[in-house]
Length: 278
Length: 294
Image (cartoon, rainbow over all chains, first blue to last red; front, side, top):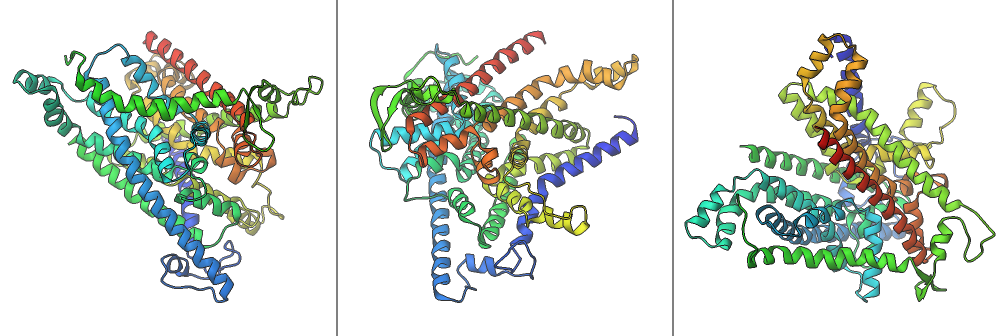
């Protein structure tokens, strides 16, 4: 690696690699400002119309039937976004509580089934989405549970609990148990020690786990696709359906907004992590 | 050490996960196993009687007829395995040099590029695949550019081919390969690399004898993490693949949402689960062996 030619070649390869990763995202962003409504691949001129239409500020379609279809799909999309946010909020809360409790139990207690739990908690993460999705579908149908937002929330929690568990467990590994021992020696009950000594030290890890759970829940497509039924749809499932039915130009604007949101969330995650190391 | 007696608190901490994953994870997996052995009903649904032809069909025999051997499902299974393996190899080839490059940057730039590699992970999978749809379409960006430069005279048919599926999978799996690889490359003992060069080994020897063995755990970890979601993937082939890019995941989806043959779909899922568990078991035993050597 010491010779400059080799290093230059490696640098060129690496920069091309990052271009490969980011080019597709910039393609979407670019096309989201293209005014051509018929063929979005042919550049007409710059416009904000897809964004204003999406946010309900304007409507460029003129004939009545077209307009009705347009408004309907925008409404459906906003409803899907609301469902996604609601589901993500509930799943984040539930999986964070369960995952954190499990991580504490496995890190601070020695019991016979500990090894089993450690392995078992990897399984929901490693199980392919499609297997988990159809398993839950058959399960809900067999026990006669109607597919709804509740089934989506349950489905997300099954694998997100494991993600939170991993993140929190990594955090606990770096915490010296001496403080907890001191607390116990000074007469605090197990429960009080846990709440007043361990949990405050764990907060960054818990927040990190919750953020990850939120992001994955917002993005989950496969499991939701199988267990969402006909009523509630989440945003990824809605976009998936849109891609299958044929693409409309406003999808570029939605996609650009999603890219923007993910940059904000990733930056937030980075900030959380940098605070952790302080 | 915080070795504590088993207590009520432990019970309270473990009860939620045990109940939740027991009911909503283990039970559904058992139900798939059960359904894969039941008779498909005429109009969707199942009849509660034992039936082994769901598996027979996967391995090439049509329902109850031993004479006709038509291994179409085996072909699709083979295709899924080879696409997943190809995805592993390609992500590895792309990520390995870049992991080296990033690990040699100064602190500030290293953080910037590590952030850039994790960023797509936060970005919606379906949005990233949709971008490739825009690029690969016959009237898409790639063809527009190639036609404009005169490199080709007719639009390339890339979309809805196996190549598009593998390209899409490589694209979405890159962060999963990169991060374990980077961790291994970053922990590389540079003194050993330099010692090897000083003692007269050439670059290739140093790579094979020093660098490769030390980064092997990262390579294997990345390979497992990329292979498992790839083999059962149905979104990528659904969006970017045509009939020739059909994978076992698409087959499962069809059985549940259009053909309504749940037992056959369950049997196919059991095959996916079998592949995944085998890969996991092999990788865990290997990892134990590798760490045993160290």
